[in-house]
Amino acid sequence: MASLSSVPCNVLQHIAFNLAIFSLPQPPLHLSSLLLACSNIHQALRLQNCPQLYARIFRATFDLNPDLHTRISDSILASELYRRHRVLWRTRCMDLSSDLDQEELCSAIRMVIEDTGQNEKLLSSAGFSTFLMSSVLQRLMHVGAVNLLPLSDDNPTSMVMWLLCLTLNHQDINNTPEEKRNALLRLLRFPTAYRQNSSTFLTGVPGVAEVVRQPPGPLTDIDRDTILEKATPIIILIFALNEVVPITIPTHVPETRAIAIASQRSGPTAEDLRSISRGRTPLFAETKVTRFTGTNPVAIMSNPIHLELYKSRINDFLFSTYTDPNYKPGYVYIPGFLSGVWEGSFMVSGEPVPTNPLTPPMLGKFSCLKPMQCAITEYLCFSPYLPIPSSYSLDLLESAVKSGGFGYGKYAAAADEGISAGRLSSEVIDVIFLGETLPDHEQAFGGFKFSGRIRADGYMIMCREPKNYADREGLGTWIFEGHLRYGVALVGQWRTSISTATYDLRGIFSLHKTSDVR
Image (cartoon, rainbow, N blue to C red; front, side, top):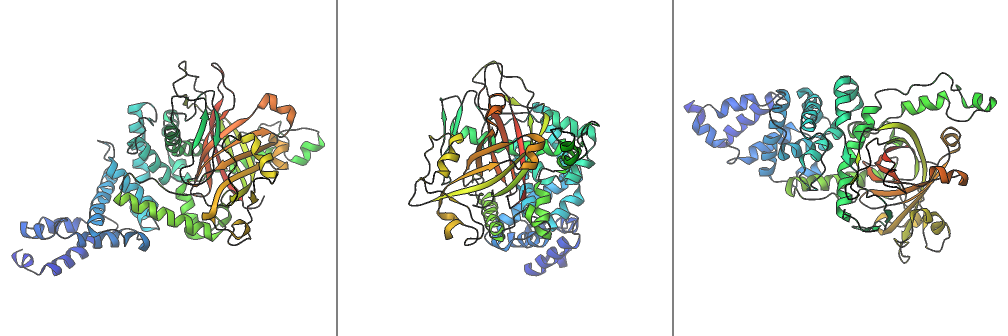
């Protein structure tokens, strides 16, 4: 080995590089053998002494984004290579002796989000989805519920839930044993972001739009947003796990709408229930694949401008995770994302109302899956007009916008790359959206109208009221609050506008875009 240790450093690094990539997609075992050959070679090829070698191996092993990875130093990429192989090694060995730490979770999340094909091959060959499901179950069994408190940015439970949500597809869920799926569903409980007896208003899009609530309570504004943000992947997983079991269609239900009308029967038909059963909560892994293959663009983003802007913001977020772990993602909503028809469902929480009014209620034991639809139109506000004040209640937004006195204009997809009146999306100072159920849905499940607001970070809030005034006393006003996710999913929590010490109806919802046209 003396002759090899005496070769020039650049030649030795070239040999090491070829040994590392020779075994792809398996780990670089041949490189490990070379490092253990003698102390001189080990010293010459240490990560700290030649980060450029390991950065080069990283670029040959994992998916590359020129806009992203060219901005990152060789030292950072070399360290990332080590962390990723550590995650892959633990996955292959099904090493559940300890939970994934924060560095491992961050590296795994970056592998998933940066994937354009190669990363997925590496994760799939290692059996990552199976390993992760087992790891999440083990972690949750220790705590008994998804603990979103304290509200720190490095909460490992929150990070691992996001990782599972970003990794799984519906086939993975179908392949998971029923016992394991049910065990995970039982453990997916979390504290709600809502106080009891609170009214909610939301200001406009710019920057860190303030959330104002009356009366004051134990949760601060930042607490509310943080809990809701961390609840998003849990909500997505709950819906995806429940969708494995198809809806049972009662035998007495009429087969079609025509038969129901002829027999003067109201309510859903067998066709309606089958259509609901075919609906699926959008998962990031499947949305990502659809973008790469170009299939079904309407279900993703029909406007290429939206996709390019969204990708650029994802890149900024990914870059920040390499350099600044405390970075918070920026704007993810772009005017035009909401306009169209959204369909999905909501579920009711079966958790009891807490006896202490200062304790945030828990959400869990979900049941009563009900369909939901909303055909949305966006209204944009530009300077010199001012946004509608935050003191306006959500149920008054429709009359305020349609009065014309506040200068809000309807979003027009054909005007200057989809921005109303030829204005740029960066010029928008507020967005209000109005919506309603369509006639076919109303015949089956009742008619509702919606009004709400959305911020640039994707946070949205809306109220739902029955179209029929006679139904309002019984059904009341419901408040929906959540986030826009990867441009195609609206997920979050809902509650009734009125709650008491013994009555506090609340739950979760999931909507996906089915059409860009109302």
